[in-house]
Length: 330
Image 1: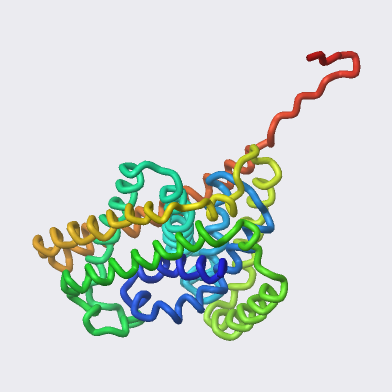
Image 2 (image 1 turned 45 degrees about the vertical axis):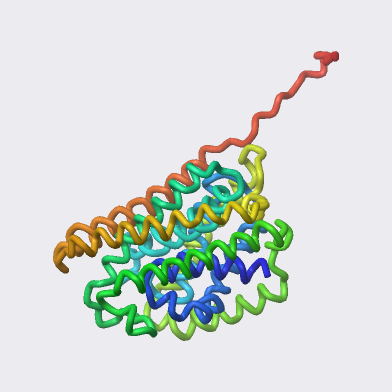
């Protein structure tokens, strides 16, 4: 249940809130995302670190497996594409899905005040409403379209509201499961399942990704080794604190889920205002799509590099060593 809850939660942010197609085919995508979710949980249990660098680095593992094993997005059009590396692996999967959707949102639901949690959820609702306006642009030739025609093109406000409410409900249910029924030890996936996922992922990667990017194996190994180095160092040198597994499984009072209503309320209000303005396609591209993608891309790189620098500088907890001639008395 722990793995399925994490996959369902991450899928909601990585797919449903990214484009409408990820919501209409939600159940099948949850199964599809079991592969990167397994990589995420294995990283958390293998290197039980704490602090924000751990969150960013396990999020990067999740993002690189999603866009580097299941698709060839991370490799771009040539061996090193800075934009493709960050967007969407770091910019969306690591920051939005793992950083906000899995970790921060759970902490806010667990013990933050109503005002603080509501403000954070409302802020994400505004972000989602603005991003959803970019989905009204004509699809590119290789874009995936949602299974429901009502979610193609100019989506009506009522349909948007219903979609957002359902996606938010799925998020709330997943966090409730993690906070009420899952223990930190449950996040450690079994060896047999890891082997199955490794074999399935390797076959998918070899037959569907490598033919599209021959340099993919080398680049993927480098990405994961860098993340592994950072996570290993963070787990050994970070100051004592609650592990990421413990944070994800913090108990959540069911009544706190009501705070999530700030997300659809803010999203619908913002989207309604944007529909009233009725910007042109060019305006959406110039003032919404391009600035948001550029900002997220830079933020993804900035947080990833900052996490690596932070763990690289961390010398670990200081130890006080007394000479043999010193006596300690009560």
